[in-house]
Length: 396
Image (tube, rainbow, N blue to C red; front, side, top):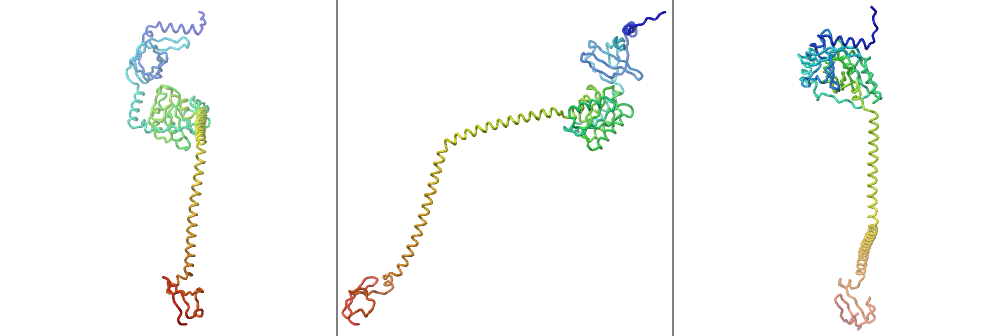
C-alpha cells in the first residue's frame, strides 16, 4: 500500500477530526491546579492545569467565563469541556465550558500563609519603606546574567540616565538553591558601600518558577537591607512576597529601571521651562518697575520747583538765624568792652575821689592845686561830692 504524502495543514485537520469525534474527549472532566492564569483583553481566559506529573494548556471563551468565580493561580479546580487542536500551531488544548474551584493548591496556600504572617510582623509596613534616590550613581541588579531582564534594564537606563553605573550580581532565579543566591546578592550589595538602589527580579513564569521570590529568607533579607530595594518579578499580574516587602514594586524590570532613574531629557526640558518662566517673570517685574519709575519721574518734575523753593526758604532761614546769632554775640562783646571802659573811666573821674571824702578847691583862675597860688582875701569855691561852698582865705 502506497502512503500518500500529506500537507501539514491536512495532517493537523485530520488530528483535529479525530479529537473532535472521540466520545470521551468531546465531553471530558478533569481536575488540576491552575497556573499561568492570563486574562486577555478580548475577555477570553488562558491558563494551565497541572498535577504532579503533567500539565495541559486550557482556554475559556468569554461566553463561558463565570464572572462571579474569582480564579487565581494555585486554585485546585474541576474543569469540564472538550479537547481540540489549534490548527495553525498543531497543538491540542482543553476548551473549558464550565469550571469550579475544588480547593487551593499547596504552593498558593503556603504563599497566603506566609504573606499573612509577615504582614502581621510588620514586614510590609509603609512606615518601613525607604525612599528611592532620585539621582543614583550606582544601581545594583540581582538577576540572571543571561536573561532578558538585565538587557532590558541596561537599555532603559542607558536611554534615560546614562550617567549611572549598573553593577550586576548574577544569581539563579529558580531552582533549589535560587533563594540562597538571592539572599547572598542582597547582602553583598549592602556591603559594597557605594550602591544607591537595588533592583531584584526576573521574567514571568508560573507560581512554581517564581517561588524563590516567595521564600521567607529572601523576604527578610530585603526587609533588613539598608539600601532601597525595587522588586521586579514576573509580569504585571504576578505578585510575590518580594513585591510586598520591597520598598517599591515595579510591574516589569523595564518599569523598575524607569523608577530607579530620572529621565535626563525630561530634566533638561523641565530646566529649560523653568528658565523661560523665570526670564518671563523677571521681564514682567522690570516692565512694572519701569512704569513705576516713569510715574515717579512725572511726579518729581511737578514737585521739583516746590522742592527748590522750599530749599531756598530753608537756606534763608538758616542765614537769618546765623546773622541773629552773630549780632547777639557782637552785642555782648561790645557791651562787655563798654563796661570795661566805663570801669576804667570811673577810676579817673574826680567825683569818684570826692565820694571817698576828698574835695576840690577852685578860685577865679580855676583849679587850685597848691597853697602857693592863693592870696589872703581870695574867694574860693570848695566842691564836695554833694555840692560846693564859698570860702575866703583869711590866713596863709
